[in-house]
Image 1 (cartoon, rainbow, N blue to C red):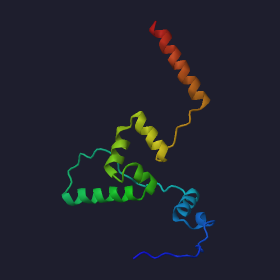
Image 2 (cartoon, helix red, strand yellow):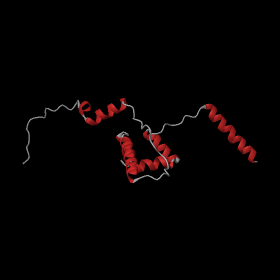
Image 3 (spheres, rainbow, N blue to C red):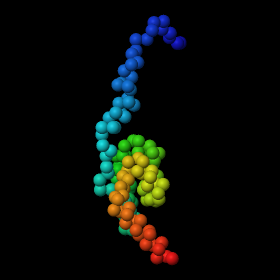
Image 4 (cartoon, rainbow, N blue to C red):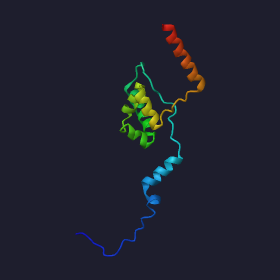
Length: 129
């Protein structure tokens, strides 16, 4: 049975940004640094390991992924395998994606490096003729 009230609501809406959990979390995230994962192990492992060692390694990787901020985990659909796939491929699209979410920082090219690259390119083109 539905209940209807004849009086106007006493709820005050002008303070919703101070009490809404979504606004609070966003405000706090702006002040907090993104945690970085320390001592991660990435790469190809040729050593033979026991099942227990493999499971321990998988659990450690899962824990490291879970330490990332929720926004970053959501970018990879909360799937550590998708995250590792993007990290391992390393193509331009994936690098831009990792820069976008804050995992990688854009490399700033100095003026000297740019001039050196131009000279190298000019030298290669003139030498090819």
